[in-house]
Image (cartoon, rainbow, N blue to C red; front, side, top):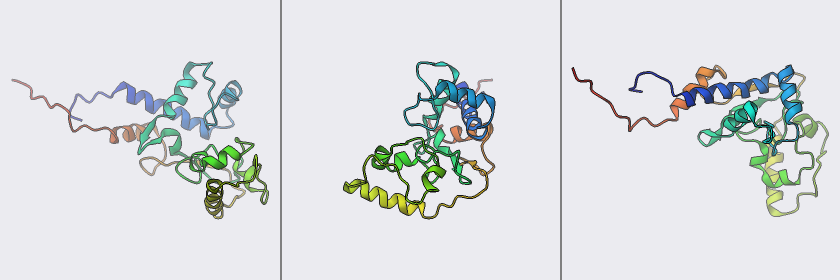
Length: 200
């Protein structure tokens, strides 16, 4: 952008760490993902990327980067969107799949009522009317959220196809390091940059 063509190392690091977040979502059966889940299980604060703060280390850095707003106040993790298939590996409340944000953020009052906050989409939808609430939605806010959620779920159909993850960010070719870097650059304001004229 008028400089020497040297990338900001912070942007490169963000894009590379985001790539590990993407791999975590699409490589669910790989050993390294199972190790991360075993080490950090129970360490999340109702998030689709679990991390125990007491462990620190690289994985905590990756999760921290994924939580930072990057585009239109959306975090990187919200740009990894679940594409519905069987619904068993997509978390109903914690993963973004129906909207650009997780259902827990869209319907916070209902999320507080949910007993099993880490349930999958299949667990929540395959049983007709099977919801595990602390109590039935009875306040006005809870009833309004329930009507909106029920309306949004009317169009959801589980299938025998495997779940997939789609990239909801810049470009149509899916996630890659280059696309992530381009997205970071597109959100940066270069209007105040100083242009130097070199003296002969």
